[in-house]
Length: 138
Image (cartoon, rainbow, N blue to C red; front, side, top):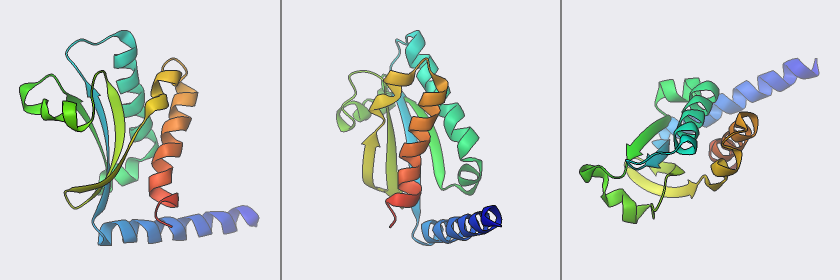
């Protein structure tokens, strides 16, 4: 009985949140920045981040509420990101957008601690994204 009640409450909350996000034109963009030179850990972090987001946020990606992007900051058209995001090396960010305007961002600094421990990597990413999905909106 408790499980059924919890699932119902969760579904109502998710519906209300998604309605709020869509009505207010909010969006999350998760970005992985890298340069031309890439080590094994850099490539693995990109793959882990991509998989974690696609696995855990299928519906949010399908609806357009969450977007994942990989950007090579060494490409001439992307060089402006180097100063904007302080990119001395590969980094990942969650950017909260309202329309096309960024209203907040957070660097996912700890991905480097969990590069070779996918379970911890995924848990960290999900906790950070869920903060924007659920807690920050309160």
